[in-house]
Amino acid sequence: MKLAASNLGWAAEHDEFAWELMRELGYTGIEIAPTRVFPEAPYECLNGAALFAGVMYQKYGFVIPSMQSIWFGQSGSIFDPQDAERLEEYTAMAYEFARACRCDSLVFGCPRQRNVPEGRSPEEAEAFFARLGLAAARAGVRLAMEANPPIYNTNYLNTTREAFALVKKLGLPGLSVNLDVGTMIENGENPADFALDMKYVSHIHISEPGLGPIQERPIHRQLALLLGAVGYKGFVSVEMKAQEPDELRRCLTYVKEVFGEV
Image (cartoon, rainbow, N blue to C red; front, side):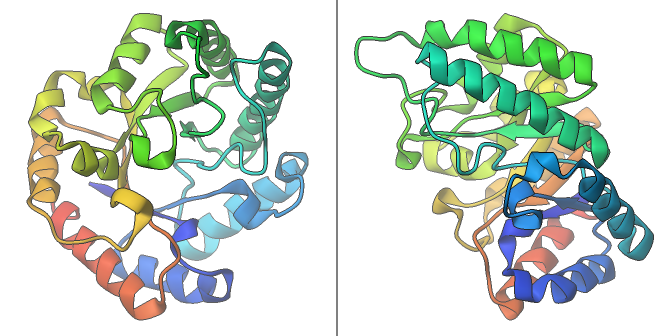
């Protein structure tokens, strides 16, 4: 199994430590939040993105399999036409940034912007995501829909089953699913329930509800067995809030032990 870790999992001051640790443990991917690399106007930094990706590969052997927090710092609602148009344009810029660093999967979480206002229907968002999916396909990337439970203050795509249902309903090659284990834990979901849907998954987050440090759980070994059985070819990525070096080492080592031999 190919292993990655999100660069949100440690503070910037620990970058070198984290990168060396990942290489030592056999991780071959680094998932990035663009504003973690370029704090201001990241999508205007295409040359910088290409340079960053090149350095990560040449120095550490890392590819960039996924981007997350792609709307960080943005406001508005996808249910407001003016906001939706602006966010659609911003997402197109994110696709170009992803292409610059050879990343083909962008996680769509964005719980606040996708929250369904009172009196509106979730189905109203489908045309918006269809346009994003078409644009992603044209750019050669995939927008990976991520289920977020209500603890993240959203009432749309709260369950993994709902994320799969949307992607299957729209049926666009530019849309996929980001399988989030923290969501599955919070919802009491079983990996085996999605065995037939794994072909829609472009990326996987090993996370906890609330993005705390990774805990040892039976669901991880259940998922590892499932991924091996279905021949999953993507990355499994550690996602959590910034941890101190000792805790980061523990979490990355544990995930390597569970998924690294699959």
